[in-house]
Length: 203
Image (cartoon, rainbow, N blue to C red; front, side, top):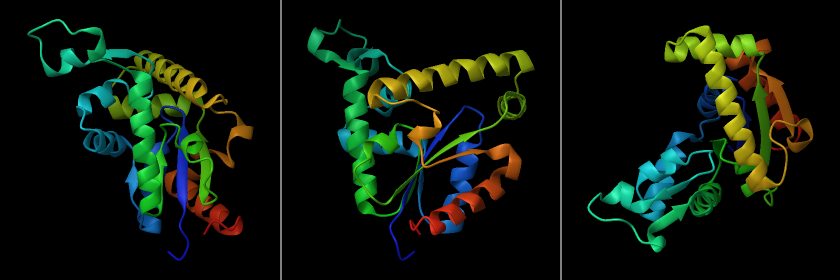
């Protein structure tokens, strides 16, 4: 690739975000960061990956002693807020962007990298019935449980994004491009994003 590009993908749960990101990574030959970002943040910070996984796109407070030891009760300074973990994660996102082209799924990456001119911010959605079907297949759940999980995940992602970015998760004006991945399918959606990136001068 001649140009550096960072594609940040926001997504509804079951909206095809990771699938589209993976297709983009294959077609463009650039790395994709989803849960991998959490592992990298843990390595960069020296904290347990479990902390980042438990706080992933949520707002909570964790005791470091509950992760590292159960022998004693932790004093106040042993507590790490989700804000502290978020700041560490932001630093990892910035390091990834400095290294070259990348595709980053979720984690407020569009906000974290808002000052870069090489970013393309995309939001992916699908009708609820399509997302329910995807989640049923992916997690072997009943329709009712899948729908409840979708509502729970989307609520958590919205609260997380809106809290840290002072913006609006899933609202069209927040992104460069919003797509229903069920219309063109996973690969077709990836192709559309690439075409959009070329026509907009990002590629």
